[in-house]
Length: 298
Image (cartoon, rainbow, N blue to C red; front, top):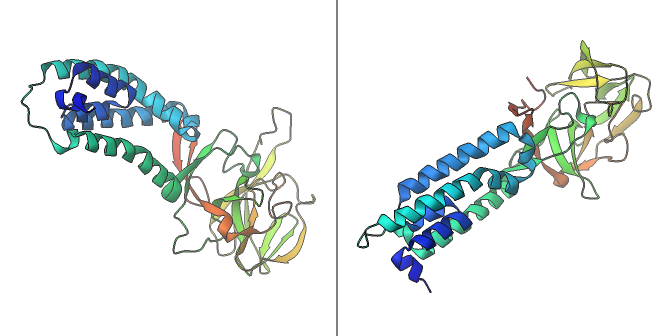
């Protein structure tokens, strides 16, 4: 059954390399340094593909295919000729044994699943409610371990699941026990008004329909950092909200596009802490990688 591993036949080397991965093909051929070389090249190709097509961040398997397919073809030819010229009496390293190759192959998806489950998870949530911080077409990575051992803070940009299981990105404005109120579009936390500094107006995204420019402010929440918000008006239905107290274990969230956001003022209500997926750490836009300093994009 494992005769192909004993003889390291050229057809087997080419097949393993193309079907599975050049890294495994080179391990099969007892060439650990070449396996590392292919791994580095595939990683570089994945980063380059992500820079050109940032939408691939939300399609992990497609990204892997884009990055590895050329190397599978080249590697299969390379592996075939390596197997033909390989000495039959060559001493085999541990990583070339069939069980080691199988375990290494299984380690890749297990590692990817572990990263997605416990460390970082990509999200594609095209929502105008977070403009100008996040806009349609942006993709984000969420740091899922951000609140292990620490609690969310005002101003944090988070991804959470609603009661229906839908994912949202919003900004925390109120912590458990806070008294939150909006008056003329300004947020009040425990009676203290958020600081607003007017900056240049911008043209919001309105689905290709004409819309007026929006006033842009740098908002500093009490006890929180700075972030930019859009304010179309100060007397709309979302601009004057009576005071509410955030329950224990819950959070009050707002969109940065204050007049165009379904958040705690509307259907979402208070967000239970256990429904928070994590804190937004990185966003991709137009092929460029931007680090969010939690409250604002520099």
